[in-house]
Length: 195
Image: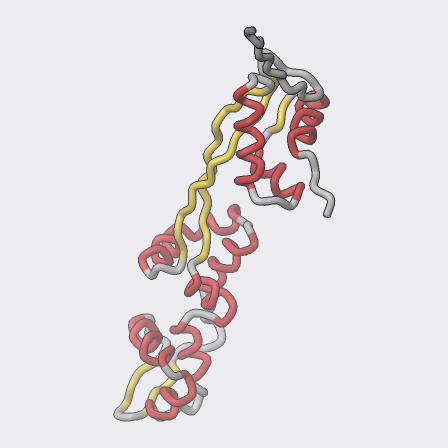
């Protein structure tokens, strides 16, 4: 197994460009865990080959449940699409959707998408209804923050529903240190023998 000399990769990049903009991006390019790179950076910092400037990036990430909603649709949208135009009995809907029926019914009724008449569930909304929750979750999943920011209210709603969370990622910008050299020279310790 060939292991890359990450120390040399860092020194070469800093020599060529004068800096590394973000260690997280470099770790992604090298396809390695960021913590491996952090260890190499710390080693180079000790001998003043490089200096680091801490970076902090905050972004949205989906919870496990959020990933399910992004793929399958929100419970309320699943309930809406599970109710045919002619209506369906509540028991049939519960058999068809399981736990999702219980979770999505309240939101569907609050949004006036469906109504209950006895044991029948009647569809009120047409095909104009969009699954805003799933749409915003897919934006987050794809990293399309610009489209997502238009849905600030929906984002707050998704946080309340524990479908998204804010994550802060720590990384660093790397520049030349006062002892910088393009190749690391290991210091040799000499011991004097006394007779």
